[in-house]
Image (cartoon, rainbow, N blue to C red; front, side):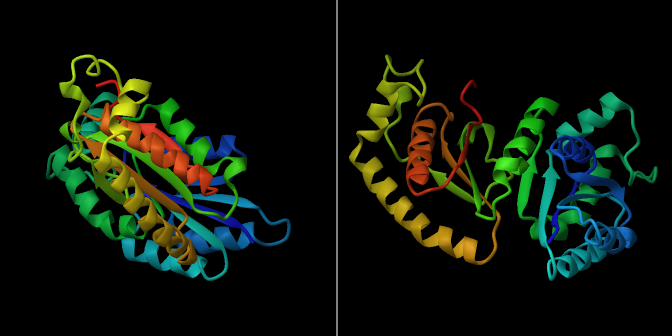
Length: 282
């Protein structure tokens, strides 16, 4: 059975870069694939001398209904995962301004922001079908490569669900690409303790303060109990990725400490979570 990865998403969000990174990992990648040829490419790739790992990069001009129909057909015979690359509109406008490239959907009747909004609306059904949504707004090419390597490298070819846990600050906005969001602003804030303010949730004094609160223990117990129910159910439904975000006000103290604690619990349960702290240095 061929392992198929379909890469789609907004123009300028990093599809071609992700394709290059997959090739470096040994995937056979077809970039900017016309949707009409998708079934034929898969047929050729899974025939005699079958490819074990096939990456298909679908361009922005493909009809979303046709993309969804093709994905559903492929899933009847292959392991198919869909990655949708997203980014904030201001960041996409900036990228196009820097590259001086024309947006594929630019018909000359509207500005760049309006064109991106039209593409975003057009691709919403495809995004809803994705197994993994990646927000590349704050990722440079090296960080995107590291994410692709961590998610699709040889050590992650197993069929078990992959879990990402992210800390963030509500002051900087909720991450776009998460499945579960937990708000821990109800906990006492170390920011208001002078000696703890310059430290982070990675430092022992802050960690001890956050985890020492009675409400923290109750929260962790209940959330872990919920995940004990959800994780097997998600896996049974064939979900390949689960992203969890834990947020506090600034993203430096409470959310960081709890993200590390939750990741430790997940490792004890036999999972291998990918941990990031989005706003640790803000």
